[in-house]
Length: 294
Image 1 (cartoon, helix red, strand yellow):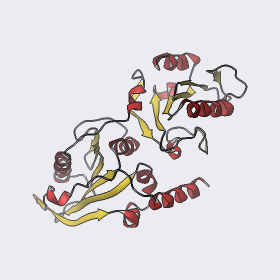
Image 2 (cartoon, one colour; image 1 turned 90 degrees about the horizontal axis):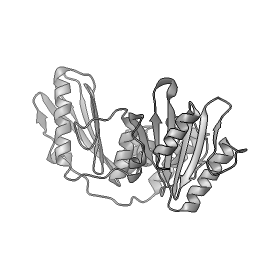
Image 3 (cartoon, rainbow, N blue to C red; image 1 turned 90 degrees about the vertical axis):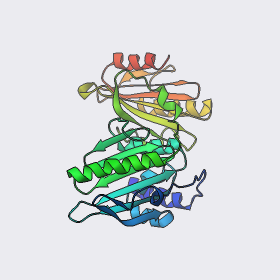
Image 4 (cartoon, rainbow, N blue to C red; image 1 turned 60 degrees about the vertical axis):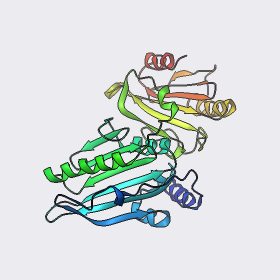
């Protein structure tokens, strides 16, 4: 049922008008047609259904973050692994950042406004763009080339974007480096930990949410923070979480041990909802509560 819903969601997204469309950068203007032993074998420019076919099964991720189109190219050289440059244009820098947080698991700053690099793979975000550069195989030449291509793309994007403001709400103490994601569609609510198979906290495009990992190993817990357009929406989400996880509790901030022996709590601050899942002790819950500014 979950996968069926995803497919419906993808189809609906393609039928929606794209808002906030910005001018795509044109890689053929700044990426070299030849770089040392590599030559461009194909220029790519996809949008609409053609883009959905190109992504082939991964479209829901990009579409949920306001995908506009993808442009890029493929490089080949005799006896060399193919290199692919993909530049995804999103409707906002917040959305570009969101896609990036779904893909990286550590934070580096070699390229753009945040990046992650391997010998055969580089991804980064900058302004409204999310960039993926891959080599079919890591060799000294291909590793050097993908880094150079990343530099070309980074330099060709003239502006910079802002991270969503809600990211600043995450307490830094014990936060796993690169261990959080930003989203505004409930399909990603279960990215780190299963919470519910429905939109339990009413996340919409007007909701800005982050899900973060705190602690390591046996002390790992998960913090959810969501900003709503108004206080009643945040309160409704709080009530729904409380009804599911703490139906017998009283007061405005339940702190209790669940049947699986983990700890849970949820509370609100104006238009902002907080919730801690998988807590390993009541002290861990209390610590995050006080770090949230309460």
